[in-house]
Length: 573
Image (cartoon, rainbow, N blue to C red; front, top):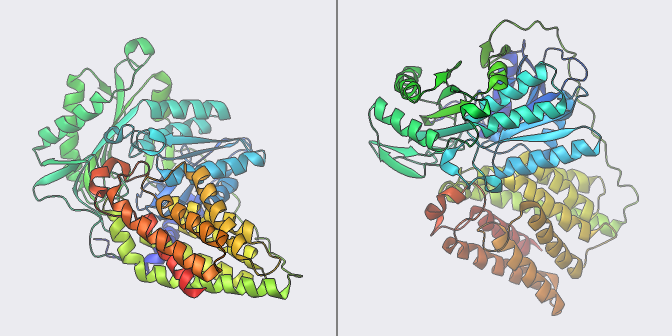
């Protein structure tokens, strides 16, 4: 259990503050992350890595000379928001473009992808390094590929070494993606992890057994097997990884028989156990004809206090071997000769622009105040439902949905109140709430709720009191925006299964001449029924997909929370 956490809502911020103080020779703070505290030359490609927190030393522990230039620190097990990724990337950029590295999870794909689009729109070259090493999730991660686990370390190290060596932007992208393509991992868990402030783990493993094919966001394994001897565990991991050997890594392809090996602890597996496990793993791989180059054993990509381990193998060619063994110094690792450095300038946070709502009509300002009241009511209800939403999400996911919804709605309520008090109309108030929700919640649900509220806000406008027709149009626009962003459809077991019936019923009721209160109430009832019906669906996308059978009989957490929001608003209209 995570025992030292203070206020769970500020767990990450306070941990990062302590980390920066401890390792100031390597890193300095920026909003929602860190960048190097040592100078880098103008024109150098910046490697910025990140994801949810709870995986230390990933990701901030890999910032330093020879490795990453910055790290974005999301909430525990939740992708950082688009704004957070963009801000850290801008702080780390030195004129050579930015490579954004992260594991292959839906929230990270969305937020890092949108941040890259924003950087490109400003003329900054930006590409994604999406790590896809987990053989247990073949074809089941985001974008239909594998998930990313400890292979992050190899891909990030290769990218950082290439950038440090002066590679061009295109070549850093090329070689780091190649490193990912020839990396495979497999993990096992003996016990689940516990989120800060929670008393129960996200999953349990049957006594005397191990979960095979776990995820690093607290997802349980895809199967259970009895715990064997070290040799038997080594055989299982090696067999699984070698069975996933990528095409094009034979001697004729320039790879020869060289590999690097990572034996990774997941948070509470002792180093002695990892050393014990490495022995038979190395023996098996050498018997298979491989030469092991610069192996790493230790806690490399953890999952809070999860008990377990993973094996990563990367097939090396001459270029990858040279970059893998190149010097690097950062909080988590020191390789080769010390790289000479000089201090970087202290980063100064740019001031946010202040919105001007002068001239907004009084009727519109009253509507803005009403929107702020509604968002505050949503916040209060979601805070009460946090534990239950987390419980539902943990059945086949990482259990953080309740926390994410609370973080998002708290920030949204604060932003909405500030906008309304400054004279914003309904649209501007809701838009401010959407931006704050996405920024603070992060993850998949954060960016989706941000897009949802922005699309809704565009239809409400700021001219006066929104009509029932405008509200119905906002609901329809929000559905279209979420579908475009997430690539999901009704039946995929997502929030859309509750959102679409809500929008359709609302439009139908308004078209029939019902007043807004009546129409919204009927739509909320339709949404609630549809959310409950998701218990009969199998997830088709997202983290729950590899554990689809576990999800049967339980509703989707995103659909449940959306229906709860619609009922809350209906009650307060």
